[in-house]
Image 1: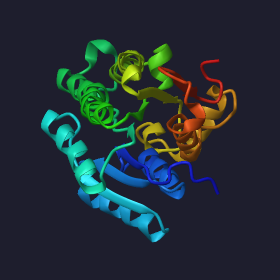
Image 2 (image 1 turned 180 degrees about the vertical axis):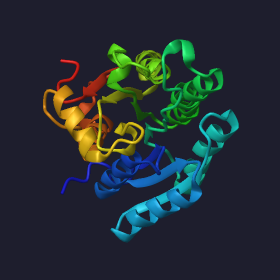
Image 3 (image 1 turned 45 degrees about the vertical axis):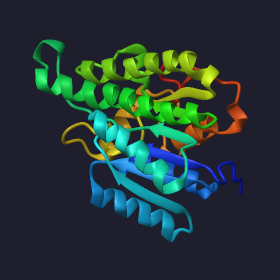
Image 4 (image 1 turned 180 degrees about the horizontal axis):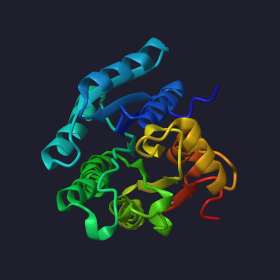
Amino acid sequence: MRERFTDRVVLVTGGAGVIGRVTARAFAAEGATVVLAGRDETALARAAEEIRAAGGRADHVVADVTVAGDAAAMVAAVTDRHGGLHVAVNNAGIVDGVGPVADIDDDAWRKVIDVNLTGVFLSMKHEIAHMRAHGGGVIVNIASNIGAHGRRPRMAAYAASKAGVSVLTRTAAIDHIADGVRVNAVSPGASDTPMSLRPGESRAERDARLKASIPIGRPSDPSEVAEAVLWLASDESAYLVGHDMVIDGGTTA
């Protein structure tokens, strides 16, 4: 068993979601103290308890990353309770505003951009401020392969928000590598989570649809996304700066 994150404190936003939970468990299994952040305190507490029950170290903090004060308080809570912040995974995201561009509700558009893009910006702003004042750190943002190609009908809001995350990642990486803060992103394709299901679609129907559209023939397992995040957060990828790692089974190859 590798322990690449012993004595490191890791923050995972969107910590109650599937990829957030799996990623947090993977960090904890490699020695990290993990703090899960999000809006659903009950779900966060349950996820943190699952990690502790398995022998890991975990905490949670309630925060809405679209609110500047919450993002600042989130980072402050992590550092006050655990003495620092070494790795941040900005994973919080939603799918909303689904439909042709001309029909997207204005409020739904703003909601998606606020959570998926502004939430990453506000989180990074305060994560980086702490990291550069305390010897550096690593940030991994969760973008999406849709942001790279946009070829997904009725998903303009989500695609635009994730394209923004990818570009923001590269700019932040250049801005702050001299501060000792290394920033990269992971762009998953369809993964085995509720987000990949269309309204009224069964899991079997989804799998059949994805088998026809993904060269590898299946959605990713969330653990495969988590492994990529951990590698980018580890010293093994120390020379990688401003990279967006696409994990989509060949969809965008």
